[in-house]
Image (cartoon, one colour):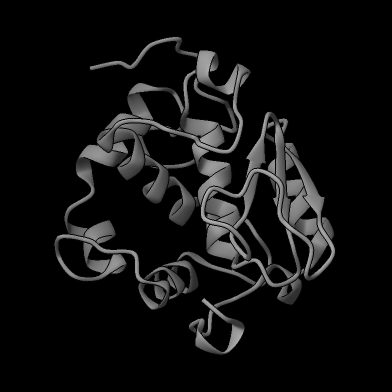
Length: 174
């Protein structure tokens, strides 16, 4: 996609960099900024999408905020064994991918100037697909399994609040 074809979504450069860094530091994830026009290390989809290498999350000013959160949520949700060798492809099963999407929506409320509502709008604009049609409909009416996965893995509490812990499992919980 070229810049003129990309949907209008919130970009990392639209929000305070220190707030972004502080949020992800709670998980031991280091946010590294890449200069505009440069390749993004560890980007599975290519620029402007965020990248992951080990405990480093790479973004540019034009990286969509939803992409930064999505990759961070992959890091949080993946088991400790995969996290130890993480290089670009976060992998994971279908249930984990749903949990990643749910967690990125929850965490959006913790970034000043952003919100879960904006996250869901940006996800829809970018082309995330959900069985019920929109991220909001999925989140509010069809994401019980994702929330349960996060709770079982100790990543959210019973009230769907983040625990600020990483998944410490070395195998999936079924």
